Image 1 (cartoon, rainbow, N blue to C red):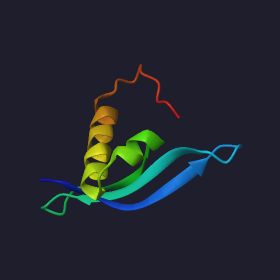
Image 2 (cartoon, rainbow, N blue to C red):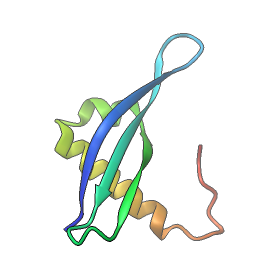
Image 3 (cartoon, helix red, strand yellow):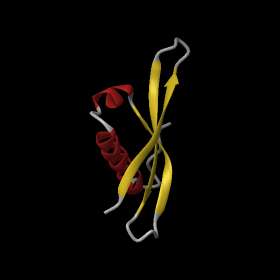
Image 4 (cartoon, rainbow, N blue to C red):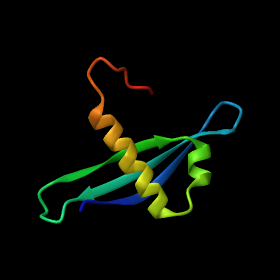
Length: 79
């Protein structure tokens, strides 16, 4: 099983000083040490405050990674 490790958080603020988005920095590797991945996944502030810890955040990253992997080329990526 591939485990996702949260390695950091970046808080982004809008012009008014309100937190607008949270980027979860992650890294992962498979048990055979053959697949590596790392990056940042944006989540909403509501998702961040609903997360009960690192395991919840890891689950969010996993779900969002799977979403991205399953997107077709026709679907635009939101930024």
